[in-house]
Image (cartoon, rainbow, N blue to C red; front, side, top):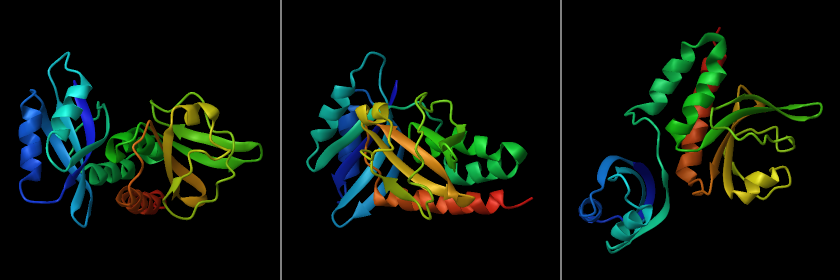
Length: 218
């Protein structure tokens, strides 16, 4: 079983090694590590770990927070494919996908951007229209597109009136970026969090701009 931990830790020599040792003491094997954000004196890392069958997630939290200066922000099961150059491979796949480009985007976006689901939303005469959705996209779809048009990547207020009640009940964090035009957006969801970090929104913005350029090519 694999889990994705988002941890805050003091940005000092040896802290990551101590964390690895502590996780290893309960049989957890680190499969990958991504630095999400680095600030003055701290770092935010996404760590994918594999644990023995039957191990409880709470043991990972306990082991991680035994290390001085470490705090676990979130933990959730992880089923994504580990890739070294995820964004580059996604852009390459989109470029060769022909008419299925947007479906390729939403299928791969959850693994690339570490979210639960992705959809392409546009506005129509009767409200929101979902054009494409990942296999994990919620059955309850958004019907109100009053937040469109959108001109840049941004985190969206999960308590806004347009957010379906079920999404709010699941404490779903939301982010979006324009795809092709301000009236069409890539919408991302993370039920239960964690919050989108500023660096993640910046990363989403760069990806959306590159994808928009690719989509403009014949």
